[in-house]
Structure formats: C-alpha cells, structure tokens
Amino acid sequence: MTEPRHFLSLLDVTPTELKHLLRRASELKAMRRRGESYTPFANKVLGMVFEKASTRTRVSFEAGMIQLGGSAVFLSPRDTQLGRGEPIEDTARVLSSMVDIIMVRTFAHATLENFASHSVVPVINGLTDHNHPCQLLADVQTYLEHRGDIQGKTVVWVGDGNNMCNSYIAAARQFDFQLRIAAPVGYEPDADLMRICANHVELVRDPLAAASSADLIATDVWASMGQETERQQREEAFAAYQVNAELMARAKPEALFLHCLPAHRGEEVSADVIDGPQSQVWDEAENRLHAQKALIEFLLRNPGDI
Image (cartoon, rainbow, N blue to C red):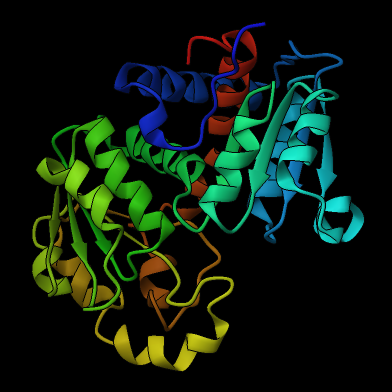
C-alpha cells in the first residue's frame, strides 16, 4: 500500500505543487460561480477531527467535500472517545481504516504529527498552535486573484508571532516573497522556522516602519483560543500594533489587507480598515472553500505525489 502524503505544513509540498493548487482553486471557484456540478468523489468520506472550535474551517471543509460529491463526518471530543482519553494513535488507526481522507484541527502540533504517522490515508492540518497552512492557501489565492503573482512582493505581518505568523513565514519561502514581521518583544514567531526561512523574513519592531511600501498587510487577533487569561497583558503589549488608517497609509496605495477572522474591530484592526476598500477579508474567507477543495482533490487523486 502506498504511503499517504500529508499536508501538515506548506513546507510539505513544493512551490510548483502549491502554484498548481492555487490555479486549481481559482478554476473550482469559477466553476461553482457558473453553477457547474463537479462531483468526482462519490462515496468518498472526509473525517473531520475537531479538538479546537471553528466556524470557517468546519463549514469550508464540510461544504467542500459535499460539493465534490462526497460526505463529511464531524468528530469532537464531546462525542467521541478522544474526550475520554483514547490515545490519538488508536483513533488515527481506526478512523483512517474507515474514511478516505482526514482533517485534524487541534492544539499541539505534535498531536497532529502523531495522528498522521498512524494514519493510512492523507491527513490535512486544519490548524494547530504552530501553523495554519490551509489559511495561507486561501490568503495567497486572494492576493493572486486581486493583484497577480505574489512572488517578489513585500508582505507585512503585524502582531503576534502565532500560528498564522508562522504560516506566513513558510509561505514567504515557498512563494518567494519578502516578509516583514512587526511583533513586540516576547511575542516573536518560531525561531527555528525563522532560521530556515531567513532569506525571506525580517523582524521589525516598529509596525509603521515595517509597513513602508508594503503590497499586503495581514494580522490576527491579539489573544487566540486558549489565551483568554492573557488578554489584559496582551492588550498592553500590542497596543501599538493595530492595523489602522495611519499604518495602511505607509503601504502602497494598492496594498491589500487580510485577516483570517474572526476579527476584533478596535483591537488588532480598526473598523475603517477591515470594512474599507483595501480589505479583501470576505473573499479571503470564501477562498478557504475553494483552496481546500483543490487540496482534497489533489490528495485523493495523487496520494503519493503531493
């Protein structure tokens, strides 16, 4: 039996494969808007393991699999043995014997890696505390559709060096753009990842300086799920790191703004920016659907090639 190839990080695939995925995502988006039915995966089942809550990830994966002609099974700790302490590797062995592809959304990245190492079908990272590669597929697709190739562009990440920031670092290397990270002391991204992608990444403490002549500005909430007890501390640390009109004015006039959502207007982004003409967050959110459909198609049709 062919060993499954998993999508746990953008670094798991080649730049050529990533470009193929995004081209295909835009094709699938156009097909859906024309009302074309495309159902190549009848009787195929996507297992969705959620240890961390979600809106966009659940709906986009479930709707996407249904639109491709298959079905999806939602599993959470509340209604599975995962919530009663079953080892993750046991769940992986059993679940992967019954479904054709699996998406896991969890906290520790090691949990995802352990799951994938015991699965006999492809496993997709739906988010971990370390990275969120499916979101970056959607983000780069959005830039591509509105501004063309992102290669050689300047992208700025403002705020926490979190899983989204880590994913932007990997994307900088894979899509060959320059990334400036504006993060306060103590909230830097993964040091090993910064080292691996050093030729494409720069850490800049001043967010206004970082935004100078940028093609794309991206951010995320100051306190993610599981960090609620740090809210006050984080609000103080990130007070100068809001993406607002002043910061956007430092970027190029045609610069886009992206946010993976949900957003807290008045905190990490001002309302006039996220609801303004440079914001493409709604296309970005929709593109989760199309990018993930392209990913599912690629994994199911070419399980040994991605």
